Amino acid sequence: MVVRIPMSKTGHKSLKEELSQLEHVDRHVVVKAIEIAREHGDLKENAEYHAAKERQGHIEGRIRELKDKLGRAEVIDCAKVDCKRAVFGTVVILLDMDSDEEVSYQLLGPEESDVKRGSISVLSPLGRSMLGKEVGDDVLAKTPGGTREFEVIAISSSKFS
Image (tube, rainbow, N blue to C red):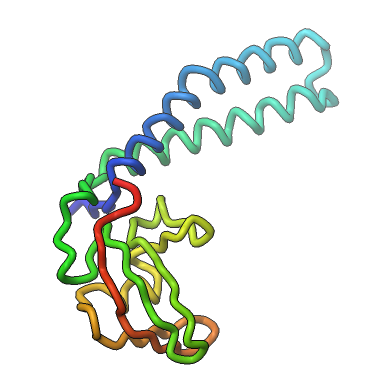
């Protein structure tokens, strides 16, 4: 059974662009670097050659990883999700019960989450604890720093689609 990876349209497009860059630009640049390094002679002591081969390995590994993720992607239009409950793609505004501060997170897939940009993975401890909650519900999240308590203040459609 194939495990699907939830992904927004924006996240899917971003991964496709990265894959295209790796396949059509970076791969060719590193092959050229390997050719040039080979011309310098003795490969055993050729640091340029070994660095280029290592870079080639990283590029090929990332290409395989991206193809796998894109092949298993379940693309979700975040602009069309129901905002009655916290679900993939929604922006949830929480009140931190300890600090009395408001925080806002968009629930996205693990490939797209970026706390600095205001998004967290639906698979993270806080993301999992928010799923299915409605405005007014309490959220208890068991995080590495301990249990945190929040209240859902608002749920809206996405910042990113």
